[in-house]
Length: 258
Ligand code: GLN
Image (cartoon, rainbow, N blue to C red; front, side, top):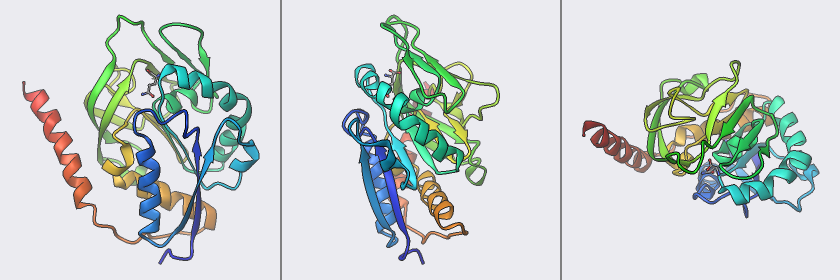
């Protein structure tokens, strides 16, 4: 049973980086802990929060944003929070970075106008927006997980909406293989990235309510790192989530039948 476990989730820039409904990932993690009797706390980490507040956290989440908000968060992330986040990821603290956040853990994001937004170089990746004439990568998206190993082969669904095209360094593992949609750059057939227990992804949706296997993997990994032992999570009925996933897979199939 998991009802004597505690978990603290760091939610980075909830006021700036949650433009595409990514707060749904926090709600999903919170409910899936509460339904299992896990004492879960959400700690908002804003521009004003001291980075020392991060160190007691067991799981990290940062969501997507338009270029303007991404820029507002970038300096604080780079100069204050990222050094602590980097160390936590090196210590196998699980993390999920979605879209703009995924871009910000790389080396830089080059918007279609203005200066490069320098990233934290936690992941070996870079992102370039090819210009305001370029097609925005938007729509339902499906992919087959490559990592984490325990979920390899699982089909995940979501919604993507980004102008930036992300290229992974040759040692950085892609999270998944695209089945339908664009993914990292619409060219190499990959989506997201994976390093130790940290996930970067372009999947909004939000990602976790539609793909509860990833939510549970994050929760389980966070508990196992914190308590230094194997932990089994109680079963939850995810039939509703399955229906939502099938809906998107059906839609993608219709698009691909045309
Ligand atoms: N501003 C970034 C881009 O357009 C990220 C967008 C997002 O977070 N959905 O690529």
